Length: 551
Image 1 (tube, rainbow, N blue to C red):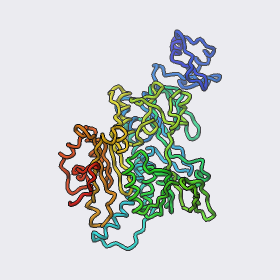
Image 2: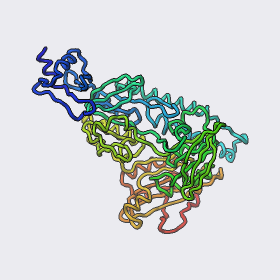
Image 3: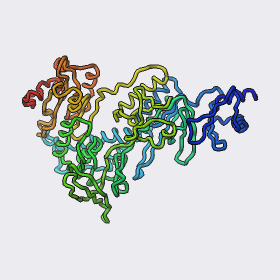
Image 4: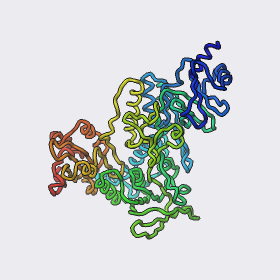
């Protein structure tokens, strides 16, 4: 027995607190340090976990020299869940840790991450609620006899949306159980490249050893903490979908896609909504398309305060919020009152509580995101990261899901395929939807020069807009191509109904290297908005009127 124990200590590593890089090894199967008796006693008791020994932390692996798990995933969002389930199906022993810190307003949610709980899913459903409001107005022209005033009830909508979200939460838990993935409602952090500490809400600690660690914790909305009253009186997209009562007159600060989507559905259900923009809307997107999106929103009823920044938020005795802001061009201050202030000024990666600095995981100092290689590897062996938490990656749910599944296959030794982050399509679900894939016109010009690209474009009118007599002046298509050779398509942009459905199909063609001639050879489906893409023939360079006429 003693000989066996002497052999077992070859699997013990000792690290001083706060210095995980320094480790005392055992030589020739015998521990040479002064903690021999303590370690042997711990082994005899069968506690193969971290041990506190006179200021040291000791972890032991199991008797076979293996880890508790093949893979531990920190983060139970769409990407983390996809990675963990895929790995389990490939025969890996997997655990996933997920823990949601309540917002400043106390909002919290269950398994599934941002997309399911406070992102894509509730956003799209509330967007649909707003579209139905527009459809009710249109229906009169189509012969439907409607009352003069139609009222929207926030509580009914919110309850239905939240119930659907809860069903998805439950579905995720069932899927993890069915695929034999261990789910732990713990806040995860790294002790070393093979050890994860999980902390419960009550402060109970659980230690897991694992061959590989994957970080997929995503991000959370930022608060402008330098603005007095911002945190105390404001909300974010982490709160808006779980409000029991309508937010009332709302100021949305920011002009990201999150800001515009929230402002859009709030306007659509009849709430007085204003967007405050510091500089430009939809930064990073094609700016001509961004202008069309905001122009339509103005016509739709959303107010915009341009080139302005908030200075403070004060709660009045009436309960309303007084916002003071300044015009960045004139310096003049302005004030107005609102029922709610929604901050949509960017997102911050969830990296601070992971213990990455002690482990030596390299971050982008400006963004706080993890620096990763093409294979999602970090600067520390056996530690990987993907999704919104990774530097330079699209902050999109389907991208994280795909990247997570591919990573699972690589870690299980089933494939060497890497994620292709080029030509990833997306859609902004504003009142007039905007879908795009590939390069913006600005980026194409930057890469190839103005004379190196050809831009085909068209203004069109959706058939659905005609009888309803809706303004279609912002319904627009732009196809950006290389000017020479086969005119390879570099980017495709579309504003109009069901933009996501339109762009999803065309995005595959860009993955296949589609050219302008391929577009012309494609027969459209009539009558659809999408067919206008394959009929496009007028270039910006020509100066001709790109307005589509006829049916």
